[in-house]
Image 1 (spheres, rainbow, N blue to C red):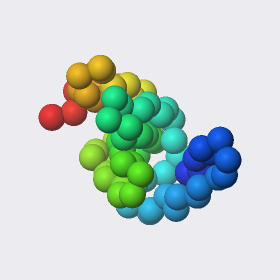
Image 2 (image 1 turned 90 degrees about the vertical axis):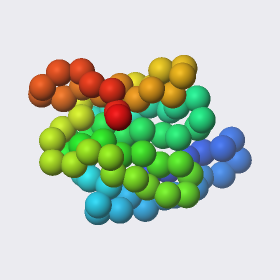
Image 3 (image 1 turned 90 degrees about the horizontal axis):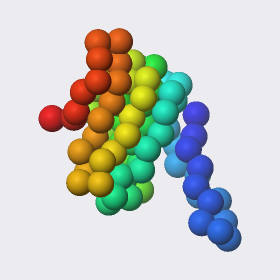
Length: 83
């Protein structure tokens, strides 16, 4: 799987690493430009150069980022903020 970005002139393709999880359920962009992915296996982020897996092994069905940068996500157990 890949994630692509169009800057108005060209497409950039970013490989989705296996450790960043599988199918995407939701996407949010933080005020710092970091893209957050709620997936069926957890929560991952991409800062334009590096992928980070924050939560693995349980789905993050929904993700949002508050103006102060707090990451909120929902899973089968409720709504949470990323520590």
